[in-house]
Structure formats: C-alpha cells, structure tokens
Length: 262
View: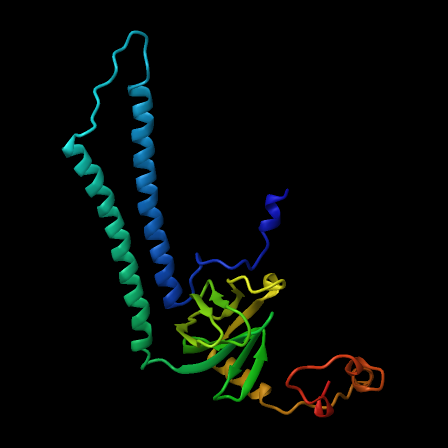
C-alpha cells in the first residue's frame, strides 16, 4: 500500500511535454533510454551466455585466455565509444534545437516575466502588465515566454517538467529561460534545488490560458483592491487590521498595512 501513495494526481513529469522545449527534452530522454536499454540487454545476454558456456565442469581444462588479444580489445573499446558518441550527438542536437526557439520567436507573441525565488515561495512579476503574483504563474497559450530568474537569498532551481527544463536561480547572478507553452491547462512547477527546511513546500502552479482568457485575467489583476461589502468579509478585515488583531504581531514585507484591503 505504501507504493500507492506515490500515485496521486497532477504529479510533475517530463513524459507529457506541452511545449517545444519539453518535447525536445523528452525526445532526448527516450533516445538515451533506448540506447541504454540496448546496451544493457546486449551486455546481460553476453554475460548470461558466458556463465553457462564457460561454467566449470568436472575435469574440464581452463578456458583459453584472451588477455592481450588486440582485436577483441579494439572492438570493446570502439563499440562503446560509438554509443557514447551517439548520446553526445543527440545531446548537442537537442541543445541547438532548444536554442533555436529563442531565435525563431518573431512569429509568436511574446511576454516577459520575472521570477524571484524566496524562502520558500515564488514571486512572479509581469513588468509590462504591472502585475505581481505569488506561487501561481499565468501564461498565454503559444506565447514565447522570457523568464528572468532571480534570487535574493539562496540557490533555487526553477523547473516546470511538462513545459521546460531546470535552470538554477542564483543570488547575484540572474539567469534567463525562454520557452513556450502550447496547450491550455494547469501544470505543476517546483524548486528542484534544496533551499532550506521548507524546500518541499516550494511548489507553484502554472496556468496556461488562451489569449482572451489571459487578457481578462490581466485586466482583473490590474484593478484596484476593493473594500469588502459582505458582512463576514468586513468582520475579517476589522479583525485583521484592528487593535489586537493579526497586524499587532505580524507584517507583510513590502506591503503598507495602512492601505491594505482585506
């Protein structure tokens, strides 16, 4: 039953690619897996055959030794090198294809987002839309995303398995990712670098919307915060801001609580 605890829904995976970057990465994964599987089967087949073919029998002489056989040693040096070169070639091919995504983005809409890694949450800033969000990244379908990656504390690693690969987020050294999400849906992202005691909770949601829905979301986020009208919400605001309330002991960094709207 312990194994079934890992069968929850919405698990991040590279095996369900939804963008050109993740497609290239998944193709490379399968290529290396096929090569590695072929080598494993070949080596194990030779090993098992050798065990039975040359097993010790009563009164059997020692088998002929092959140490110093130049032909065999050349073969088992050259053949593995061919497989390693194939993996290297596939990796370089994938790297250039991913790089081409950033150089062929003229025909796609574009959006810029700044992702800041905190301990232990993500801040997403849309500078051109003047919108800031926490732990939920909204993206327009089919747009080329330029993601500026920053950290103000420790090293994090930005990763959306179904859309794009990992990139380290390093204090004092800003990185950048360029990718595209082609399918509407909700995905899971996470920090893939241990960053402290609450690292396991540093997940975030990625919501890819069609263009109209994304523009509607941006428009809604740009609206000024409204005072609550429902009685329960008004009571909550009073409890939060009033004397002896939450703000008596707690604060929100970067937020002016005098103008805070619950």
